[in-house]
Image (cartoon, rainbow, N blue to C red; front, top):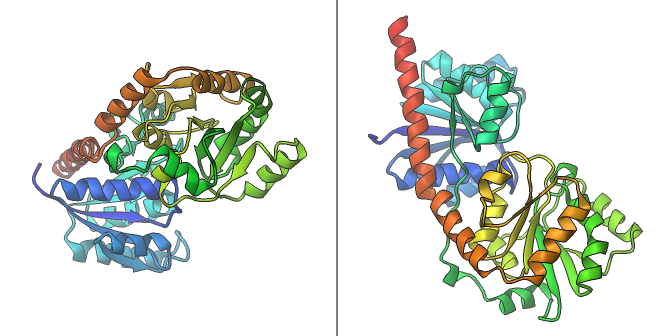
Length: 362
């Protein structure tokens, strides 16, 4: 594909999910020789981070996604930039970006980062789902399959040798070798299923009395989860360590990783755990089974503490060497920047081709 000039537009985002996928999108395209510029709402931390990564960043004030003046400003920015394509992320950017892009006669593609409703993406030329499950969700709502490409979120896969040792990582968290650490990296929200893991802990402790569950992350339900842990008398078995900037340093301390989500389009944190060579357990929902392929980890029924506890206990008891090797190979092959960049190019080609068909029909 010839190099493109692409405007990546996102309204904001936090340290999780869509913001991380946005960064991966930009990086994977840049590595393949495309010119990537960023548009975000003024004052959001993601804009500063993208500048630090070397991207040209435009910021503007968008007080309401329904403000006509904002759409006019976006149209002028898109026209002046000479972009081949606009790629939007999250609902507000998608609505304002897709309408402004149409007004400017520039094709717009939008990534659907979750299991969202199609109405948010009505005006986009083409959609990108982050899993086959995400695509199926859109098709069930009436979106034509030809309008949806699947692009798995990618990650910059560091060499395993560059990660800290298990002992070093544990020391930084204040743990020795006398405990078994089970961990999650997650925004703390009810739909992430962390409460299911809390309910599974008593059964895990019966099999492994020295097990401790370590939660890395923050969110609006963090305090409620802490109170639940206290109320159930599990304070000695659960630790909250907050958001971890270097996720691999945290993951290397673990004996098992759990992703007990109730609803997930993909689950990039599972990929990170695979790269850190930690046994993975995830809920059999959404796009998670596309990440945890047979022989690379364990799938459990969502919101089932007993099934989760049994899977965790097996991971802590058995030898997982073959599974860990297979998981790392799978993560590096399927979810690296190279695979993501190639899939994005294919999605962009479909977007541009469909745009030419529409233009020729006018």
